[in-house]
Length: 354
Image (cartoon, rainbow, N blue to C red):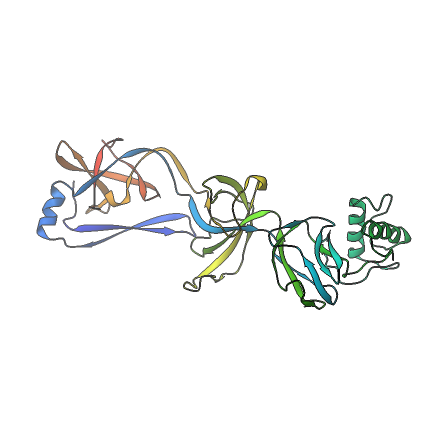
């Protein structure tokens, strides 16, 4: 078999966009003793292994919560109570209090920006009525976009339940809308501070756990909305997840020492209840790649570039070395799938000294 009489470094270049790989041989002459060593025994050996080989991609991210948003004060006053950081607030739960009067959470996508009263119409009216029905104060109330006498009656019952003056109208000084249950991440001002309309009082998130990733552009190719992934959690367990968001524009990373453009990716969990771990804990998301079942593989460093442009490995048996030409398959995990006449699992092949 023809071979080169020079050292060859095998460089693996992952063509991420195309999902394939290219192998480039780069060479420079070795010293005479190295060339003789090439013909003899290698400096180290590694085993030929039979098994499954997968080029799945792992990207490090941060465990967090969904839907971060600000809760702004709906009126002016002195903050007399604020929900503590880390607490979870559901429908009708207390978010904060101004001058001793609670502002409570209701569910809805549209913010609470005005006082709702008889004659009001809009999506916010419909949101309010749906919440009143859900809380048991709107039995028989039609859920539509019109604030009727029935709506006012349901509001009075809600106000009575909380010891409020029964006006039949409600505004931002009493309720705040969010998409669902929230988790309080942090408070801006402190109890005793003065709040003004539109001033941020709380930063909240959804209660569902997510993983946020900032992936280099070269790494982001496997991420597709709706794609299934496996997440390695801080406690060593794994959980199944789904890619729900992939940014369309690359932005500088949040690490001050590395401003390489990155793509924002959000992964949600298929079963959020099984996810444990502190906010901002590290987590690794593994994206499925190609898998080859029951194949032979060797370390990438075992490959030799031969004169005719093919590749081989140096098999060591009985204190002697011989070369076997191989055909290359999948590259993954620092190994490469190989096939070749006379090659079998358990054989030792030459590798560079560690």
